[in-house]
Image 1 (cartoon, protein in one colour):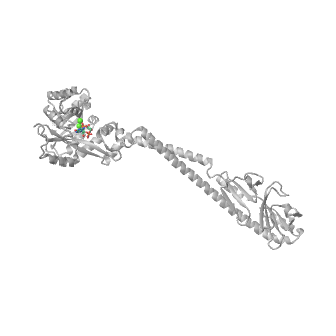
Image 2 (image 1 turned 90 degrees about the vertical axis):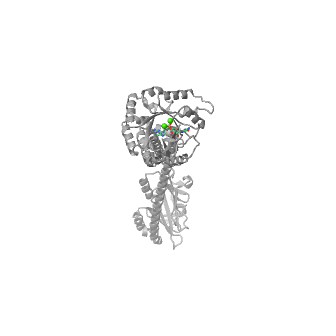
Image 3 (image 1 turned 30 degrees about the vertical axis):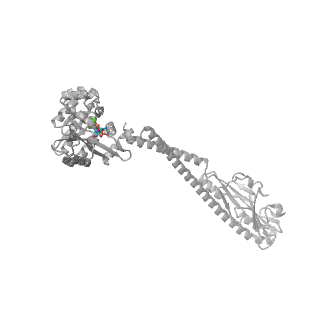
Length: 528
Ligand code: C2E
Ligand code: CA
Ligand code: CA
């Protein structure tokens, strides 16, 4: 009931909490999953950038060194092979990256560091090399000495003498790539491309460019050399997507569960009420009760209000029942007492000495161990003897007969009066009227409502009034909304009247204004 009222504009039911939690979960899953995949993606991109830089730096250094070695060998092309072959061999032997150096004269290879003297046209030895270029590179499936082991062949033209130059075959070494893969433990492949041939980590053989994967992640070119490196690797690989989905799911479920837990706990724990007390969301209003003889205010009934920051005004029917269910009625009633005590000084100026101050008590408070203490403390917080305190209780409170009997006696001893609230709505009410000594009977507004414009219809109301007379109880009619109702009730001998016809529940300031207007206001003269 409470949740329906308080959260009617907020979280009305468990179903809504569930829907909200699921939505929050999905949102969190999307957010965290998305963030994870973006993070993984950017980490991967950074990895590729690092690899690209590593490869570029390595190859730049490699080719620079190769070129300077080739330059230093160029003068050997002036000599015959037998004069320079040992030097050539030692140059090749001391360079780990070189398989062989070959000297070229008149466009013919005539001296090799591996095989000594030879004679073979360059167009025959390496048809893919263009010896008219200063530097040219190609990829070969093998060399005569090391067949079947792919190599990169490099041509360095002698800048001074036409038709001469140095030709080198290289040991292919993908050092930076290997460094990267061991570091990243990743599946990335790489191709070194010269012309239409490629050396790759995909295959042991030389591949045609057309066979390579079509979308390289990175392309690295080495300035000055007709060669480029391509890196292949997914930036959104399945593993990353799986990890992202998993992370998203875990966080989504966690967030949804937390949401549901938090909302349910808040709804169920009654924390809202304690927060409301702490933040001053409760306040009191006073509804005048007028006596039937002079139609003058004889007292007020104190009614509590809750202005919830999200749900707006919450009717007391709802929050009182909720506070009872949460065992929070005692702190709430103590708070009510505090609020009244705070108003007491001003209230004294509006209400004359002896005026009745009706305070509603919840059934569960009545039977709580601190009840007497609470009441005494409340009474002590008001100026002594100014107000006549009336505690309004419902028929439900009388079920524990023995306890009720003791309590009522004690209350009378202390000088408090007791009113039976909502009389006629509870069950077996009549029995209790005989057993307990009670001071007022508040006739429920349901009965008062049934009083029509012309005729009086309610036999129950008739019976109630007769009974009250017989038990010599003072009667208060609640919920008087029309002049006719008031007139009828007065004619029937009801002692006090309360209802919108006279005044709605009013704040202290409104009550003051209302009281001032009453001073010379004759409208209530109903009978004559
Ligand atoms: P109640 O004790 O029967 O209080 C009278 C209710 O009738 C009040 O509703 C009042 O605003 C309303 N009322 C007064 N005159 C008329 C009228 O002419 N026509 C109509 N239709 N209604 C009228 P409210 O303030 O909403 O309180 C509802 C119930 O909540 C109260 O019924 C009482 O049982 C409970 N309640 C309110 N304040 C407190 C409190 O401080 N402590 C406890 N324990 N219960 C409270
Ligand atoms: Ca009441
Ligand atoms: Ca009532």
